[in-house]
Image (cartoon, rainbow, N blue to C red; front, side):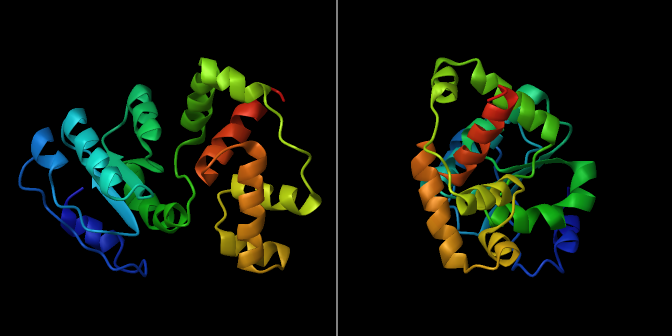
Length: 206
């Protein structure tokens, strides 16, 4: 996707768009690139996989909680898995991006995922096959309160905290409180890990 088209797609998104054409696509240069802080990073993955990985790693090294969307040309499933493991929250091919990027941006900015559901499902299945995944599957959280379950349902629909608050007619601060409790009960640190863990358990029939 050329930068001009990228700017056009997001011109009415409400975000300040800062486009940057990289001078070098060599992995060592991308690892040392000066990365500005942003709400969401949209990375055009037209370069070699190693170069894209180096750039994503650089961003996450500087800003551990960075929200990342990668746009590219027909990702192989193994490539999508690698991106998800690295911390990417959104994966779009070029054709999808023309329609979906304006909708994916605010969702990812709010902490959600924009990944094809079959890819996410099979990615979770791949986690299940690991030793850590089997151990996580065997763990059961303490019983959830009705409100915690309602908040969790909202998270699993990729709703932002404000959207959950509006749906349940509670404050956003209260939603954050329940999210913190959910993370503690499930033994994970991030809401993304909580979402993946819940998909994992559903896939395992628990």
